Length: 539
View 1 (cartoon, rainbow, N blue to C red):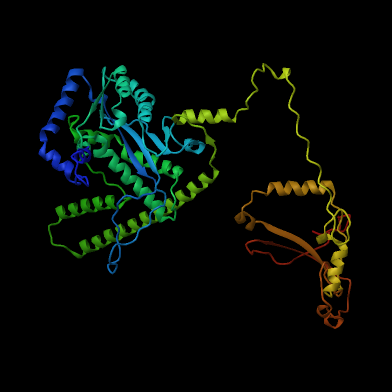
View 2 (view 1 turned 30 degrees about the vertical axis):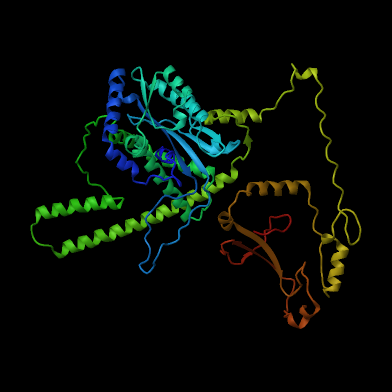
């Protein structure tokens, strides 16, 4: 407003106020601030407003991928301004918040820059959150009215202590419309706008909550950037914004914000100074324990520092270093796990679009999603017996049997064609090839194999390593036969002179062995004959 008044003077180019103009304006006009507090106190006394009925209603904006200002520790030899990594999305998002002087925070209203709503926005969020969409991600007069009618009034009607509710506002245009005033008067809400250029001093949301909210959200974005997550979309914003609200809108923080702005009187608080000794889990707890221990030792002994005190200091210092390293590793591990889980959840979320003419809360959005999934019945039809059922589509034609490109026969491909295999063997000079006909695979054998496969389909690689595979084999002394199902070139064949002759032949021996995927194995265990077996088995 100050820049508009300066431009109206006709100067070219029009001058603008400096960054310190609001503070100097307040210093020059202290009576306006005093008049504000006088007006607030008069409204409270005249209408009998309780502290539990004083609310602050305001909006704030976020650039989804920007990190707040932070301090960075670098090496001493690094000069100049260091380059930093910022996630690339700078899309604007507006959040409308409302808080009460007793520490209660209302559900937020999130405004996205979109034309339609996305189904995945409503996942894993409280049912009372509200979403709005606009062309640029900013609030409008209509959005402000819907936020008052459908969010603020329903959320505070059950908490009214007196007759009237006091609503502290700034000078935003969406709060100064006649419709806004009419709705407030119909619901016993007294809107009260603060003086211009003083919201950073008089508005509780600016004094306490919004600063913590943006700082916490920026810290979460910075943690994601450190783990290599460099693009922040709306789903990432909702997840981190929900976590940041938990830290920013604590009851104690909200109460202190109203106390700092002078809207309510301070209340006495009692603090316990008792300290209970317990095992330290953090560096702060360790320092408290160490301070208490040193005080006790100092009370019992007034002697100067001794070697035992120096040893105690070294033990405490080493414990502090260990706790800090453990905390850093645990935080890094938690961040990586959270990033991995977030990526996995995003891949499984729905991207279905929903036509959106006005804002919804999460509960209504989920209801509309279920309605979209239901089948739509044709109009002017009372029952399905009055109309003909739709014709079912024809079943796809069965696929033709494969044809071999080598022998041109139907029923197999060239990679399993016998003639093609023989031709390849002759071209490769592989003549000694013994093939035995495998036994026919009967249906009962197929069923057993299928049952076994279904039973072990959920095995992990670690579990497969624990499985032992066993088999037996018969060895006949002096026979020297080649292995079956083996391709051997003529120059690699075993000659008769390489086979050792023995004086006795026809002696057979069966051996059994087992091994696992973890390279554990048994020795060759000889098996003896079983005279009770009808087929001459072994045991």
